[in-house]
Length: 203
Ligand code: GAR
Image (cartoon, rainbow, N blue to C red; front, side, top):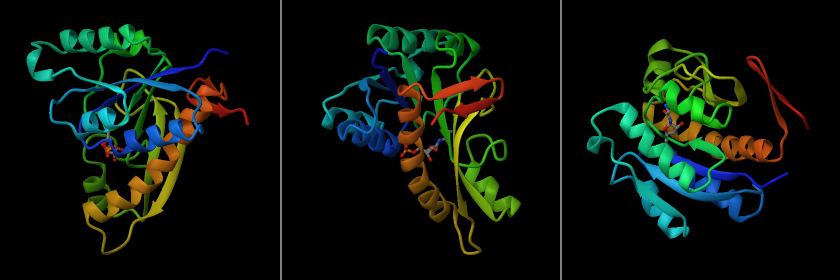
């Protein structure tokens, strides 16, 4: 089995990127991170990529008139780098069918809630407003909907009465940093089998 080549897309801080880099460096994930792409020039993820010796490229959304043109530019970078698995790590843009079809069943995302509840860009705010007692993180394959693809792994945390968006986000992030590397490890070792909506883990 040939080694997977990862391309990681981020919009900001890049703490999930950092945990993936560390898991590749320690050998837990047997894959190469070939490129980090951001849609914003000031994303901290670019600094993290540079410090890790990984090529970091900003495809600035503001410089493209249409989403299609922007996504074509992202795809061109990914193809040029030979990427075989696309990892969305805090990438805050919905990808069109054009992009999703180019890497069908080869795009993963992490969402900071227990899907299918609390989809979208404000999961922690929505969790607290609704009053649920348990939240968490979900790693899933990306399909043509929003946060709707087959679920790979989930991890739960308690929601506390005194939680703010920040304290809840911090607790969920600890789960994310374990869950995402584990899901990528399973993929690169060929241990994920998608059967319709279900992802079977062959381990
Ligand atoms: C993470 O909590 C991730 O789950 C979330 O953004 C944060 C990025 O943090 N992603 C989404 O909300 C996607 N809709 P990071 O940049 O430190 O990894």
